[in-house]
Amino acid sequence: MDVGIFGAGHFGLSLAGLFDRAGHTVHIASRHLDELSDTVAARGLRHTYPGDVELVAGSSTILVGAVPWLELAALAKELPDLEGKIWVDPVNPYVREADGSVTLLSTDGRPTSSVVAELLPKAQLVKAFNGFTTPMFHSGPLTSMGRIVAPIAGDHPAALCRVADLIKTTGFVPIIIGNLTDSVILEPRGPLPALSIPLIAP
Image (cartoon, rainbow, N blue to C red; front, side):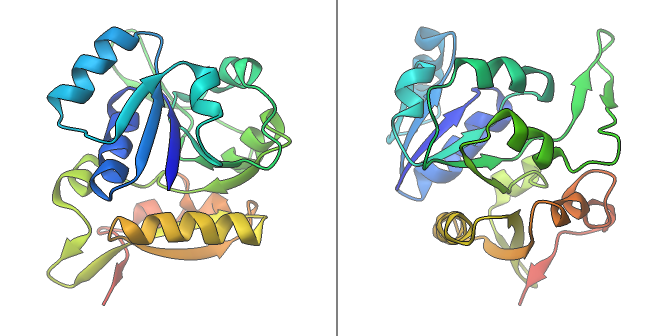
């Protein structure tokens, strides 16, 4: 598959590494392409290519919005028509304060993906990867008890199947938990992040 990623911070690059190691072609957008090219090379990502927003948007039907919560609205204004595209939403509504602390913003009880879907009304949105942590990227999907589950949610069955297939190639186990309204259980205030360990598929 070809995957487009918007955002070349720690999380975006971690996702790029996950897909790159699975053999997918990854296009990743950044405002600092020269610096990103050096980072991609240093990480040994052989199938990952830096590009601008327009190039990445046209690179694949599966696009990942890995920018901070407060930057999503600005990104949405830069994007071309996303008709027929699948938008994977891994973002939680965190904002980093000037002192380095992190604040969880309120969405007035709405699932974050519903907010994102309003910004990108023509895209088929799937909530996925928002519960992934740095150790998961480093250690991979295998544990002594089984494989780590990657819950996903969305309103479009075909898009859910495509994202599930993508997740399977990385070794994690996709489980569809429901529609975008149901995706609230995946969010930081929901029940799944409160578990002491990730969900495991034996």
